[in-house]
Image 1 (tube, rainbow, N blue to C red):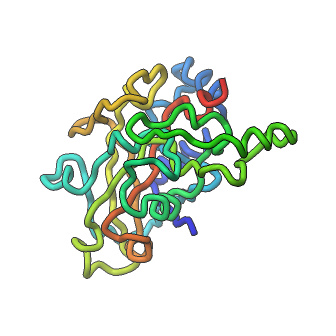
Image 2 (tube, one colour):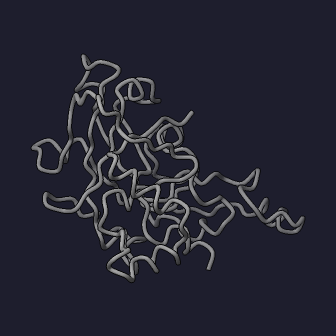
Length: 245
């Protein structure tokens, strides 16, 4: 089961404009100021066929907001360097129940476990993945999709960790929504992001451009761990490019 992540109408409009565009098409749009969408809300949200995004309902009840200027923001929201980029299921330094949690909130990655992602593992969570099943699949002429028997690729973008929501909002109604602001670090997300596969901290400060997501309280309560949420929330510009060349 993958739940719905809610976004603003403006963000959803941007997502719909770029969801079927590849790396080259997006870059062509960005070359022209009149068509450039890189500064639009929603541009860096990681929308795939497996991640369910929907506009926030008009009558949504907002029960809490976590924004970068809040005193407790850094205690509640973090963007761990150790979870940035390609994370396979047997990575050595994963949080407890990471596989369950990331699948619940984010679904399957855009890329496959056999598309070259193994060579772009996060350095803090890299290990030697057995490629024997991939070799067998290639020998049989099976080149597309995930390869059975090979370790699963769990996440691939910029993962956001949200802590303690259920505990802090124990009396909030199931139909309420929590807003989470996610700052945008251009050095990680834009083209030529040479620091992406390093331990460099993700910049999080008041005043940055940001994306916003909204989580429903009922979904939080049904999640594998309501007080430890991991969402593969942001893509980087070369996510659908670099694993294949």
